[in-house]
Every structure is written in C-alpha cells, then in structure tokens.
Length: 624
Image (cartoon, rainbow, N blue to C red; front, side, top):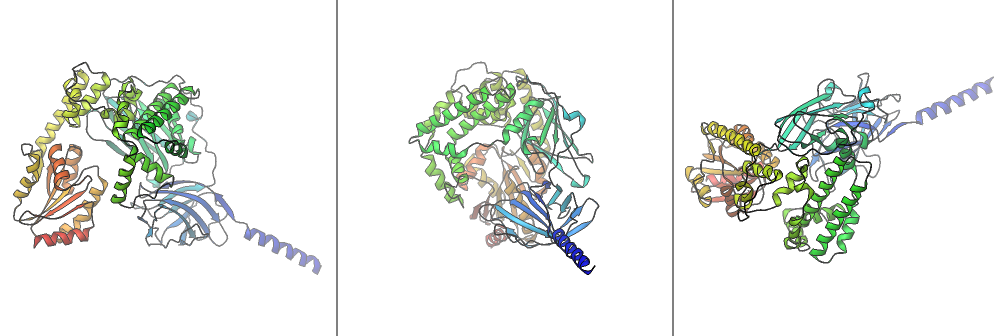
C-alpha cells in the first residue's frame, strides 16, 4: 500500500513538473498594430505564455538615432477584460536589447531592434490578448494578438466573381465624387483607427489630397473624393502595408482588410476595377532581386552602357509581363507603365538610385550627414550623366502616350520631364497633353519650360478646369487681402533680388527672424511648434517673426495653417522665392532660417531646425 501510494505521488510529481515546464508559444502571431508614429513599424514575433510570466517579443523599425519609449503602466488585456501589468524589458537572448520602462531607447544606425516585454502571467489557455500602452496620441497598441487562424469572410465576399476582361478606361473629364469604402474584420471600437488616403492631386487643385477617415463601430470607413478622371489613390491602415487602388468619379471602390491573412490575401477588393486592384496589391508585394541589378551595373564601364543595361532590363521585364496569362490586361497596363517609370527614374536620377541600391545591399556605408551624401552624389553622377540618357525622351512611352495613361500615378510623375519651350511649332495637343497644360497653369510651372503646353491649350473641358481654379484663387486672394499680417503675392512688382531687402526694410529697427517653409514640410511644422515657447519667452524683445512661402505650398492649405503660426506671412512668386533661397541663403532645402539685427544685417543662418535653445540664443544676440 505504501509502495503504491509512493508510486502515485511520484507520477503526480512528474506530471505536475511536466505541466509546469510546458509553455505555450505563439510563433509569428497575428496582431494589428496601431502606432503613434507612421514612421515606425512594429511586429509581434513571438508570445510565450509561462507559469511565472508572459513574454511578448517585438521587432521594431524606426528612424535611426530617434527614440522610442514604453510606459511603465502598459498592460496586456484578455478577452474577459482582465489586465496583466508590464514588469520589465529585459532581453532574453543576445539579439535582443534592454529597454527600460519610461526611458528613451535610441535606435542605432540600422534603425532596427529586437525587444522583449515581460508581463504578469496570463493564463495559458488564453486565446487572444491586446497590448495597451495607453489611449492617448502616440501610445502603442497591439490588438487581437493570437495564433494565426483562418478568418471566415462575409458571405458576399467569399466568392467574388471578377471581370476577367478588365482594361483601363480611356481618360475623359467627368466631374464627380469617387467613393472608397474600407471594412476591417475583427474591429473593436476602442481601436479608434483611421484610414489614411493620400497622394491624389486633383486636376483642379495644386495640392495633394490627404484624408484621414475614421472607422465607425462596425469597422467601416468611407471616404468621398472629388475627382475629374480615373485616378490612383494610395491608402494605409494600421500595420497593413501601403497599397494603391483605382478610383473613379461616381464609382465605389471597396476593400476588405483581413488582418489575420497571409500578406498576399490581406486585402480583398470589390466594386470598381476589383480584379485589377486585387492583382496590383498582390504584385506590389513581390520584391525585385536587387543583387542582380547591382551585378549587371558592375559589368558596365561607361554611362552609355549603363543606360543600355537599364533599358534592356525594362524591355525584358515588360516582355515577361506581357506573357503572363494570370493577369487582367488592365493590370498588365499598369505594371508596364511602372517599369517605364522605374527606367526613367534610374536614367535621369542615376546617382540617387545607385546610392540607394548600394546602401540597401550594404555595398557602401549610408551617409551620416549632408556632406557625405553630397560626396556620394558627386561620385555616382560620374557613372551616368544627362547627356548619356537624353535619347530616352524620344521614346514613345506607354505611360505618356496611351489614352489610359492618366489612370497610373506614373503619368503624373514622368510627363512634366518632357521639357518643351515656346520654340516648338504650334499643333493640336493630345488629350494627355491638354491635362498636363491644365496642371501647368494650376501649378504655376515655368512658362519658359512648359510654354508649348500653355500656348496650345484648346480643349474646352481642360480650359474650364483652369477657369474654375482661377476663380477660386481670386476668391482666396480677396479673402487674404482683408487679413492683417498676411501678404499674398502683394510684392509681385518687386524684383527678386530686392524682395527680401524690401521685407526687412519694413521692420527696420527691429530684430527679424526669417523662416522659409512650406505647408507640406514636416520638419518645418515641427520647427513652428518648437519655436512657440521661445516666442513666448522673448515677448517684449522687439522681435518680428517673418514666414516666407511660395506656390509649392497650396494656397488653400497655407491659408488654413498660418493662423496657428503667429507672425508676418509672405507668399512670394517662384522667382522671388528661388532667389532668396539660392542667392541669399544658399540653400536647397527647407526649413531655412535667417536672423537679422536691428540694422538689417544678417547675424545667423541655418538650413534645418537647430534646436529651440540655440535659436533663442541667436535671437538674443541679435537684439543687442
């Protein structure tokens, strides 16, 4: 009896010991990441459910030499609402880095880090958890973390019948509203997600449209976009990679987001051009063999050989696209135009493209500052110069000449590079050229370069768009003329070389802080925020803050933003702006800053924001 009891106890001890040792591990689990920064990429690589703790392993990618931070009150939450607090960020192997809660973790040169976050033990039979750092702006949240499982799609999306004969529609003006409807499976209202829809430049506007559309409690986000032509829109939601889709006036483009799915099946399109949108998304996931391209270029010894190499690559890849029977013709059309654009970008911007490829493959050390970058550009520019590739402008590229070319984003990037002056003989413009002519007017492009298009615009629909734009600009001009401290093209009669001195003369006897910026420039806007407390501290010091912009900033956007930036605002014409940047500040980038003392002499200049404290010191020096 004693022997039997002892045996049973031993068995129980072994069983208990075995059950305690057996951990539950989710390798590469599904997770929907809602991050505080669009520049960051985080993914949960593994979750370990142990007896004494739960460990969540995270792969982080962020801007090198920037910092990330996790709060000490972060927690895991199970589906029953219970919370399990974070305990530490100690590494579990040599590849992982230590991260202290509430402390800055600086990203190294690679911009990548492996982290381990430790929590109070979650029950091992748990099927799903959320990681929540907080609900405020910038807080990290990883939703629906669980072992991968197959999602059940809504019935109406289980067997979508695609149109196998899709082709891109020929361009025509049709003013209307394009609708984009996004739906996310397993959505929770507290996720508070927004869909970003961007990189659309409406034909009757000089600004790029960027929308943030919130999801409702049912996980649906709907955007309505004013449009004149079939165009391509880009969108991004949480950790779903950027993709693009075709949209059209008075049509609805639908997309189901399936977070659990493998990458190629994460987006399912319906509605307008559904098959094409699905195929373009899946084709976009594929990656080129960068090593092969690099090796091919190494075999070349002259710029002409390199251009020929790039052209052969384009022709070969287009031939491969044409042979494919698994793609709709519309998809092939878009892919061919992408290949043409890739070729053009390489031929006309070889130095940058070669630098990017070399750095990506580890063939060179990435530039740490602007001086190193400039040195690389000078070195690589010798490998292929403009004279080696001028003949490419004689190519009848599909992305320029095809009647459906405006459907592709490539058209809007590549067309303006066909530089035509007023010396070309008059002729009737193609419809694609008429669209470009309208954009030349609206974007105030240099008539010396694009004069041919401007002189020969006769298409009534495109002319109507220009007239509509001009009427809107006049309305804005009238509105701005009634605002204090706002000068919209009021100095047009001043010569470029006298523009800045004319502005400074107005404030003679005062210290003047000059900020050259643009509405689309993130660092410029960050500089405005950083300077706000400095301006408050220096009240009473007789300092004038002058902000200079130009037509690269959409006027409507500029008008909306300047009330948040106290100071004197000047909107100059391109020649005035370019002279100030190149001849006075010797700058090719923004933000650019200048400080002038009471006598009107420049005491400080800087490209890029140097920091609030340094700027404050320089302003105080100039006041003495």
